[in-house]
Structure formats: C-alpha cells, structure tokens
Length: 309
Image (cartoon, rainbow, N blue to C red; front, side, top):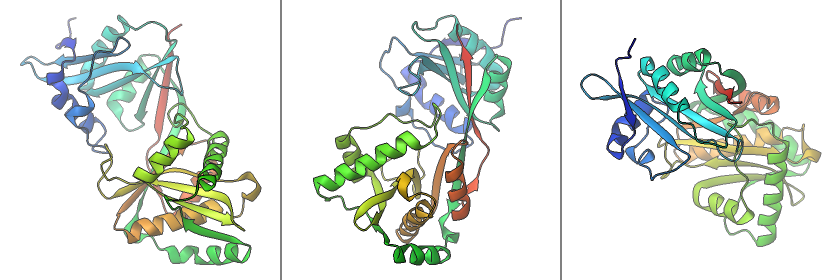
C-alpha cells in the first residue's frame, strides 16, 4: 500500500521547518535554528524530507558520516511524524554512500518515534549514555567544605585556571587532559576528537571556565565548564561539564568531587541557573561523583547500531 507522504531531497528552503521538527523531537531539550540545516552539497550526505497531502514538511531523515570516533559509520537522524520514518529510512537505504560498514543512530530511550524505528529496522542497542542536570539554585558548596579542608591539609588546593598561564603550565594541563581522555571509558557517542594543544588552549580561553587541583604546585586534577555565551543548542543560563579527570596517582581521594563542586559554586555565583553533564554508563566513578554533587539523571541515551555487511 502506498504511504501517504511525498518524499524528496531536502532543500535549503526547508531548513526552518526541519529545525522546528528537530526541536520538537528532542522535547525541547535543544532549540535548533535553520542555519543548522542549510548545507552545501556533500557527496557523502543524504537528507530527505516527507511532505503531507498539502505540501507541508512533516518529517525528515538524514545520513552523514558519524565522525572520527566511528569513521566507518553513517549516522541516521530522524525527526517529525514517526509514520513517515520507515519510508524515509528505506529511501535512504536505496542510495547509501559507499565506503561505510554500519549505521549508527542516537536517541533518548523515551523518544518513542525514533526508538520504534530503530527496533523495527534491526538495529541493536549497542551503547548507553546518561545525561543529568543540576539546579544550581539548590546547590550548596558548604556540604563540600569538610572535604576541601581535609584535602587542603594534605597539600591539595583548587584554583581557577588563568588564561594567561605560562606555556609550560599549558603543556602540563594538556598532558593531564590527554591522560584523562585515554583513561575515561567512552563509546562512539561520548568520544570527542582529540584536540591539539593549541586548539585546546584556544577553546578553553574562548569558551570555558576551567578549574584545577594542585598538589604542591603540580597539576593533578581538572574540570572544564563550557559556557553558553554564543554556543548553539545550549540554554542561555546553563553551563555544561565537558571533562573531569584526576591523575592516576591521586585518584580515590575525592579530588574530582571537590574540583567539580568548586566549579559549580563559581557558576552559581556567576548567575548560571543550571548545570548539565553526561557520559557513558561505563564511567561508574563519574556517575558516583555526580550523584554526590546532586545531579538528577535523566532517561538514558542509546546508540543504536546496524551492520551494512
């Protein structure tokens, strides 16, 4: 039986409608703008829309390379009327770019329209990630002062990272960052492409507030807060934790909890109202840290996988 939709390739004139569909499909977690979807021709990208009987864009589906964490994979994105997902998906399968061995899709477990498509199309629930938020109006650093005092007596001190730090200090911070990236459990969705030292320094200086712990002058822990100013898809008064890590020789003392608590206290004093974070469910130590800090976890994010051959 013919489906009640007309399918055609995405056009830049569809960008506003597609942005609205994606915003609604994420239940308002993010607000997308039309500029996110206006695109230049890309031979490895496929993007379709479904039109209803009166010519309105009611659903959209796209495929594009997943990225450095899964270079052999295409990412499938879906938004809008779930009744159109199967015909959109089958149309994409009929015109796959070459050179890829699997499809990946990422959706929260309570986004039923996308979840039903992935289940019915033979994808497997391959990895799980968590997201969590903290209401900074209820955060009280006083609960962590005994920890801070105890660690201070042992030689640990927390400070905000200065953007004008000397070159040798930036090198030490980069080494700690790379150590954390190697040690922290991850999956394709939670793995970011590693930055060069110069790129990391530029990002931290331009977009972040960074806090560190020193032990007798040596950098032993860090946490990074991404600030929302000018950042796409981020709420105006919400900060986001990018990475928190402790040097292996200093783990198990509460340094990650303390440095992150200090960063959250700074965010609260600076007028931010919410803090977000997340990661793979394999990272149990950070789950415990965030529970201690008062974050409330949300439904899991699932990375779905289907092999193409």
